[in-house]
Image (cartoon, rainbow, N blue to C red; front, side, top):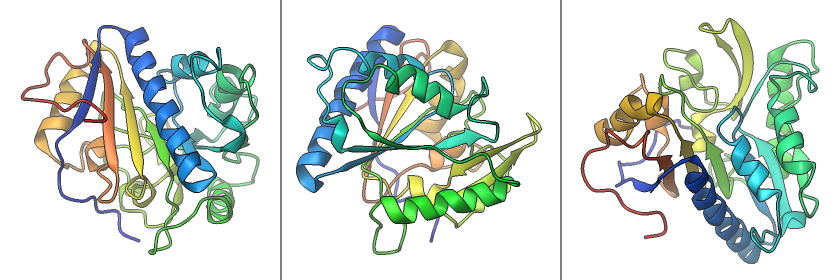
Length: 259
C-alpha cells in the first residue's frame, strides 16, 4: 500500500457566512453523496470525523428526515480516528457520535466504532483493521475504499490523528496506533493509504485560527508538515466546506463542490 497522493487538483471549496451555513452546505452534500452511493452499490460506507467541529453537523443530520433524506438503514458508519480512552469517556469520539447523531437519528445505520478496550493501542488498531477488511470493499490494491470520509483539520495542519512529525505519516497498514507527543496520548487513526483511496473526502474547517494553515494547505501543495495537504485521492475527490473566518487568507480562484 502506498501513502502517496495523486497529482494536485484544483480545490473544491464552499465558503459559508458562518458555522451554521457551513454545516448546512456539508449536510446537503453528505445526503446527496450517500444517496448516490446507496443507489450505485446498495450500501454506503462513511467514516466520521471526531472532535468538536463535526458535532454540529451530526446534530443537524439527526433532525427531520424530510430536510436531510438519507437511507440510513443502508449506511455503514465508521470512525476516522479515536482517542484511546474508554467508550464512555468525555473525550471519546464514539460517545460524541452516539450522543449527537445516533441518539435521535431516524433510521438505523450500522455503526462500527474503533475499539479501545484492548490491553494495548496496537491491539485495538489491529482489530479495527480486521473490521475494515470485513466490512468495506477494497481497491485492487487491497485498501478499503470508503464512499465518503469526513475530516477536520487542526491549526497545525493535522487531520484525523495524522500529526506533523509523527511516524504514522509513513504507515502502510490501514489503521495505526498513534502516540501524539503534544498531548502525550495514544490514538487510533485511519492512515493516508485509506484516506487517499476514498471516493470522496469532505473537510470541515471553521474559525479564524485555521486561516493561516488552510491557506497553506490549499495553496502550497503537498507538504509533510501539513498532513491535511497529503489527502488527495487519485481516483476520488476532495471538498472543503469552510466558513468566512477560516477562508480569510485563501488566494486565487476556488471551485464550488459539485462543479
